[in-house]
Length: 400
Image (tube, helix red, strand yellow):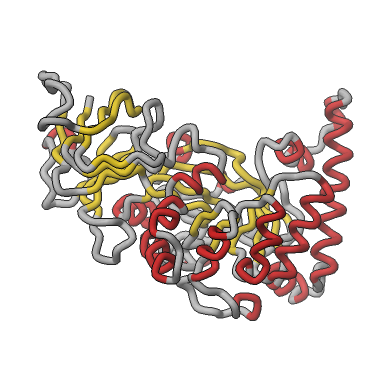
């Protein structure tokens, strides 16, 4: 049992206590609230009780990265560590990021030290259909132990990336028309397969490639659309609407130019990586103001680093820069906590501090959107996985 006491608790549910407490048992939050007259209760005694004094600090839910490539594009390992894009076939729905993510990638440790406790990780955008994402905790030795949800989304991509990859090989797609047509045909075939499956398909008629589409057509997971330009955003919305499928708009760099259309689509937007350079034609209008404009228009928003395009540890800084560009500070904070949890379909477990949720908790010495804010302690499912050397902890529980 762990008690975190004395800190300012920001739950991300609307409740903020200037001085509060949090109780953790078996990896879950079992109690939390304000401290009155110094303490909420007589703290239990015994060797199995650890008390973390957070006085003078902020206590928040773990931060969440809604779209990245940690461990699938490893740092400093070149081709040998890059498993992000299968650039031999533009239609690969059967690929699973789960099979290529290396939890030993240094980026996971960077994430933990930055207070990022979970992340949506998946294939890149070289293919029209790239395969499925997985939602993971950021600490662990094996992917199976870190897993929260898989499959979590089906990656699709529009615009420059598929064009550049396949036109360079002398193959289709070489145009935006071909990208849309190939996706429509794939969805057409996948829907027929799904209908036959529902009608009682024989085992010998099953197809491994189209099996991957079943959770999409069951609406258990969304399409995850790589879109930058306004016209690509609208094409993605058009196709998702044609097939009646849920979808997230990832990057959405020109979303601010068509904010009302994005709002009307009902699709959430995962915006970024705005800290990166404008190194492609389709990101020329990329700006930190985009996420705030979409948020004010009523779009559910998340902020992404798209690691390794921007380093994973820059996530709270990106949220701070969004606030500097006009976004409400608490909405920016929600865009790296509860909103990505909701967008990724895991908000029953993570994204806020509530009884019954995973004890993914971060203690900051200042408001996390400030560049100078420092993570003092990170807990994932009640385990202390990082602590700053200046932060006092029960010695038996400190684990770095």
